[in-house]
Length: 221
Image (cartoon, rainbow, N blue to C red; front, side, top):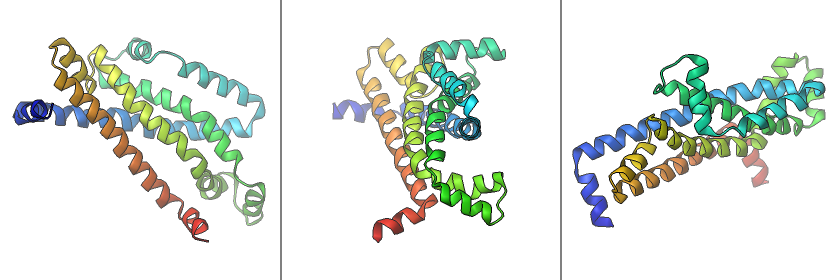
């Protein structure tokens, strides 16, 4: 097996292929993570603040997340009018999946913020949106972070499905390797997908620590 891997990476064309697909895979997974999070936060805030809308918003998100990813990859170009092989289709589909997955964690995270903290911020003159951005959202990060980490792994996994409809990423190593009965190429794709997921998760953990320095101080105490 080691000899096969060495032989695979000995080829400059294989190294270039792997590098290109890895970069594209990361792009197709992480851009929707950022966009989906940015979409989920205001929607989750709305659901938290408007009890009548909460059930509808969360139920819609749950229903959307049950749609098979392959079906969504096919439906998006039909709705947007984009080319069937456009990366935009994967970005839009995974943005919707990310937002749907994170809506409930956003609501739960915001509700976990202590009421006396928000009351104190209001007493200090914070207007609702300033209080939300400067007080509530930072305090909600530790509760929201696990959901974001799950969404990142989910996106990295789902990008691979895009190879079935001809969109790039490490999934193309799976499909090409399967068609050629080249197991080494398949294993390389699987290993790099796992390593990418691990690297992104470690990056998110480091980012969380940077955004919530007070949690480390509490642990030291």
